[in-house]
Image (cartoon, rainbow, N blue to C red; front, side, top):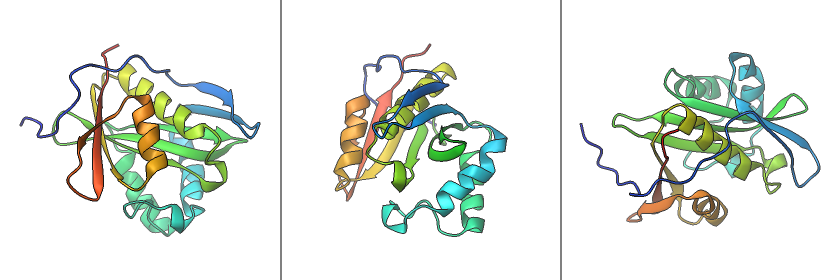
Length: 178
């Protein structure tokens, strides 16, 4: 099956591979690293504490059981996941989920207490570097067109709008093979 999505012809540059440690704009030490199974309780806790006002497109779901069921899909074999950790708490999560074609859908979440401190940019760049190191070449996402901070973030790291027909934008990036 050939992909019906369009991707940029030119590949983006290289991205950092996990682990990446940095100090955010609030002077907190943050480590972005590949997800490990022992991170699951802290990841569920982060999503359980997620402000419903910060949900986009109905995700993350509300309630521990629904969160765990949703994460089962995001964490399945073939997906690429990274977490941002501060003081042993998961404060951000980004995932690449393999689609039915030859691409990966991207989703990224930063807990509201950690937004606006530069974590999302590092989390996104590190996820793309992790995907690149694992052979991922095509990545796409959808974002609500009025979510300007997210759209600007995606454009800053190299995503291009490929579909703008609805209230959501579809954006894509091509990664260069490592």
